[in-house]
Amino acid sequence: MPKSTLARRVKGSVTGYKHASGHKPVLSSSAENDSSQLITTLSARGFPLTCKNIQHLALQYAQQHNLTGFNVTRGSAGYYWLKGFMQRHSELSVRKPESLSCSRASGLNKTVIDNWFDQYEKTLDDLQIKDCPSHIWNTDESGLQDHFVSASVIAEKGKPCYEVNSAEKGETTTVLGRMHLYCLSSRVSDLRQNGV
Image 1 (cartoon, rainbow, N blue to C red):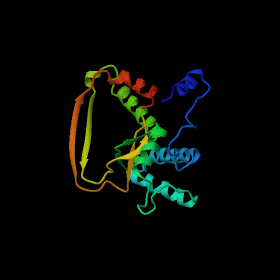
Image 2: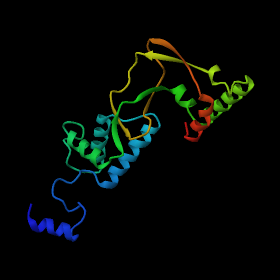
Image 3: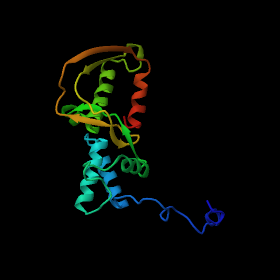
Image 4: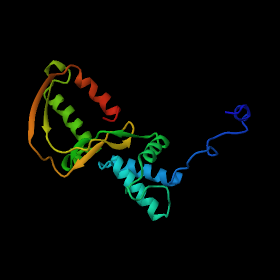
């Protein structure tokens, strides 16, 4: 790299990266930002997109807007476009979604969760065991199912990633776990404050 280029950078007469050489992205930055927002929204609603889905959507968008730069015979944007897109949108990452049935997804909201905690506190008060954590046990049933879950999808970093399925199909193996909980009653308020 020439010394004069570094000197201009150090002086501050050249800033940013818009002038940099190399291929420009096929989609404009506003189109990529809209795509990133769409990916985040769909993921939050339980319908995350796979890498292939995003590559197909990018090609469809380019074709509708008469943009060139993608291999049309392949039928999708390429690997390097997706890699660059992910680098330009660091809020996204490749994740493995958890499976969530429609009935559970509709019941997973703030009102239902707040109601559960209210009922829990009322039950502790009615049984007079709120101050006796040695009387509180947590029993949880877990079903291990053999139905399809996507291998990996692209979703927002730091947020739960669920994939809504039409129903909980397949064979289920049920496991019942039990654990003695000390100090759970004192942590209920902590959980509520943290939005759990």
